Image (cartoon, rainbow, N blue to C red; front, top):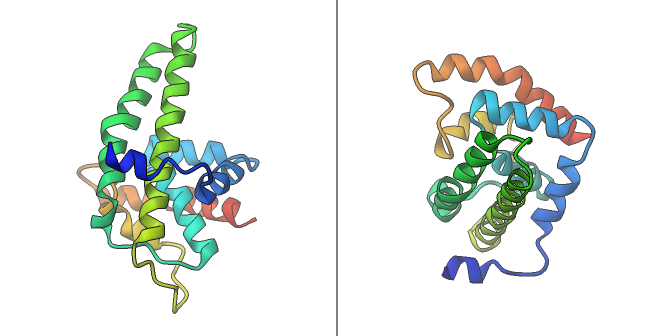
Length: 167
């Protein structure tokens, strides 16, 4: 609860950036495919592009534990409930969607708080576009079993995301 109070600021540039980027033509579809097909975290993908725009690096993965806990305890279960419910189950579907979006906004608040308070260092060298794919296991598993094969299989979709995000 303390983390929630610490992140209840009325202005969150990461949220504004994420909404704008998610709203670009094609971005939503690619992000949801990365989420559904590669178990990638849409909020992490959006935050990564914000950090790139700010020319900042990710902090140590340990500093993201509050966000990861929130994601696993709130965002993922709400998404699963909404999907299980189905669009035909109105108004419950819409209510679950609103709850999921609220949980995602809180997730971005948690990420922004960490990114603002952590010793996030300026980039000193060009980091390859694959850096988040290579850093991904710190945030979430890229499937069980053949993680390397799955990573290679989604690389074209991931590069498509990077192209959309850079336009």
